[in-house]
Amino acid sequence: MKKTFFLPLLFICFSVKAQSVFGYWYGTANVKTSNSANNYMVELILQPEKNYVKGVLNYFFKDTYRSFEVKGDYDASNRRISLYNIPLTYFGSNSDFQIDCIMNLLATLRVAQAGSNLIGSFFSLPDYKNTCLEVGFNFSKNADASKIDSVLNAIKEYKETYQVWKPSADDTLVAINVTPPPNKIINIPTENEYAKRKNEIVNEIEVDADTIMVGIYDNGEIDGDIISIFYNQKLILSNQKLTHKSIRIKLPIDSLKTDNEISMFAENLGLIPPNTALMTVDDGKHKYEIRLSSSLEKNATIRIKRKKKN
Image (cartoon, rainbow, N blue to C red; front, side):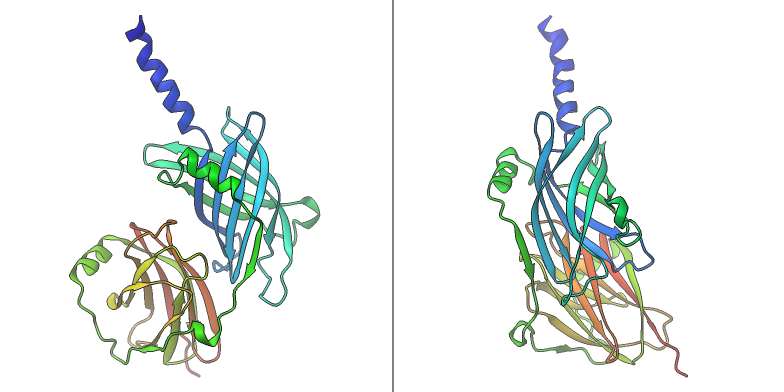
């Protein structure tokens, strides 16, 4: 009889664990507008209790980092989680004037062999639904970080945080000027791996200049992210560690191409996957700030078009 019931009980044990929202979740949350630059980099740490769920939510938006406690409900029968009264920075805010949208998080747990995901949205309270738009997300579970001790310690050591970071003169490296044509760097392993990954277009911008200044830096927690940069499929920057200091590259716009593309290749995932950065693109008249998120499967890519001359 013991052998008869051992395997079913073992299966039930693993099934219950797989259907839990306990652990570390991460990903990008995107405002549902035509402007894909309005996104939040989110980390969610959850611990279900008997009749509710609690945890910590951290996110980066533009130059702001927020961390606060969250509480809500989890219905294990249909795998739905609800977290309430979350202060999400209004997507139209800037560094000089920021306001909060009080949102509720509603998501469904999806479990598959490849991994678990929380899929859902932040929804505003009824009185603000016309101003505070829906923010959709698909968070992945970090299985390596979702150990019981790690989660409990993260929640126990939580301290509410609100930080605004502004780069000073000391936070900018001397520009690395790449003159036309861009000097191609030889790194066979990186180039071979780059070709295997998907280039995911995260934003398209139009510039009004023949050259642009590109900057890239880590505007969040420094966790050891290392990247390489490709421009029009050519490796122009190799194995650079991201810090709060901006790496600046001057790039020519290839007028023979309809589109020019800058791709961020993740050499690693750092301590907190995925590999994330903020990239700035300046044509002398306009400056764009674009959040990038690369993994071992995809390269975050910006598509650049040259504005037609009159």
